[in-house]
Amino acid sequence: MNYYAVETINDQLTLIRSLSGELLYLAEGTKRAVLIDTCVGVGHLKTFVDGLTDKPLSVLLTHGHVDHAPGAPEFAAVYLNERDIPIYRRSCSLTARKGYLEANLGSRFAELTEEDFVPETPDYPFLPLHDGDSFDLGGLHIDAYALPGHTPGSMVFLLRELRTLITGDSCNNATYLFLEESSPLTEYRDNLKRVQERLAGQYDRIYMSHVVMEAGTDMIDNVLEAIDEALQGEADDLPYAFRGYQACIAKKCNKRFERDDGKSGNIVYSKEKLS
Image 1 (cartoon, rainbow, N blue to C red):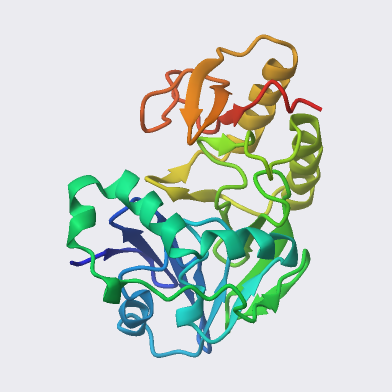
Image 2 (image 1 turned 90 degrees about the horizontal axis):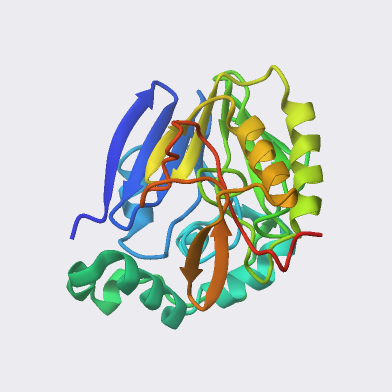
């Protein structure tokens, strides 16, 4: 099974698209390379990445969930915000990963073998990732910003010279804020506003981590607007069920979470977690 495919974005940035819909990014400077996220821990990602670059490689994780972090043990230097380590430890289990993949791959799940999976490694020795950390790749810097909300340790990354922001699941077309580990809506709103102010004027593109790669540069404004409508009881509130959770989608959208009004950015939230 060819689990990963490549799309060139520019000379320094490559999109890696997984069969289950995750979007990973390989950034390369003149001296080093960085992989952003490691998917579900399936499909021999390291071998695939080794075929794309021969530069010394580090890995930055946007957060610890099952679809972003369990591939970490294939790599030697992986950075994760320590607040998400408990989430990673739950997510790296084979049971969690197989359940996720079966739901997302359908009949193609049967094509996977045990050899395709990274072994469970709950005590993987992550390197610490903090707000304000910067990684110099040689002509390209990646700056880390903490954006708690989706998870306590969620991060976004600014590719400074490319004027590109990679948001992971911290802010996207379906920002999940209803999970047990998610912040209340008002707390997330305040965190998002602070990051927006710090990033003002520094990016011309936003890339996400699921299905649709690029968002409009007004995505953060649109998400803040959706939050305000939700808090005021004025959101569209499409019912949404996910693994036993019952939530609301703030703005009307299709099954790919593309909004009916054509704007980027949305939230999926619980009315039990407003503040």
